Amino acid sequence: MDVKYPIGRPVLPEQVDMSHVATWIEDVEQAATHLARAVKGLTEEQLDTPYRPEGWTVRQVVHHLPDSHMMAYVNFRLGLTQDKPQVQAVDVDAWTALQDCLHGPIEPSLTLFAGLQARWALLLHSLSEPEFHRTIITGGGGERSLWMLLAIYAWHGQHHVAHIASLRERMGWGE
Image (tube, rainbow, N blue to C red; front, side, top):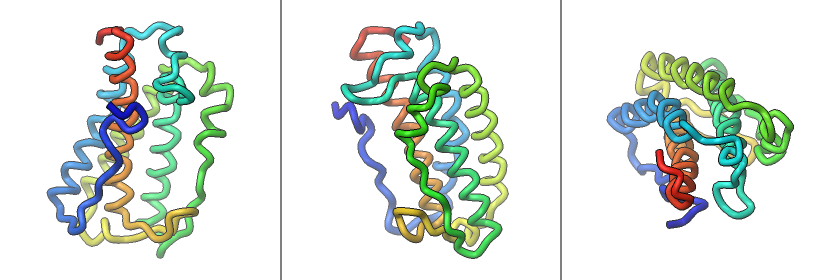
């Protein structure tokens, strides 16, 4: 198993239809539940264990998810309300090196992630197909459609939950 990409890299379909979008929305809706299940019962020592050599700790991953998805949610809203807005890039490694990510309790981030994902899903369910084709301009990735942003973040939640789940399995920590 590739510990850096336990579910593989994101694969985006060439042609997108609303069945793809529905699956990705479901992934957004379930991400917080999957994350909470993945960290349930972990000790402080386990939370401070990197999921791979030179990788983030479980604690950092938990804090990273709402930080990252919050930016994606804001970018999504910008894409819906502005014409091809330029969105800010974030240095995720610098963010996860901040003291709240290194040492803070995970419960506030679990709560934030659950609320954020629920709110994002409400928005996503209200959109028409043409709205998913609106675009944003990313700092490093050029022009990106909202369906593509949704697909990447549906994958992103699963990707990080798989980091934690695979670490638990390798370490024999149970579930």
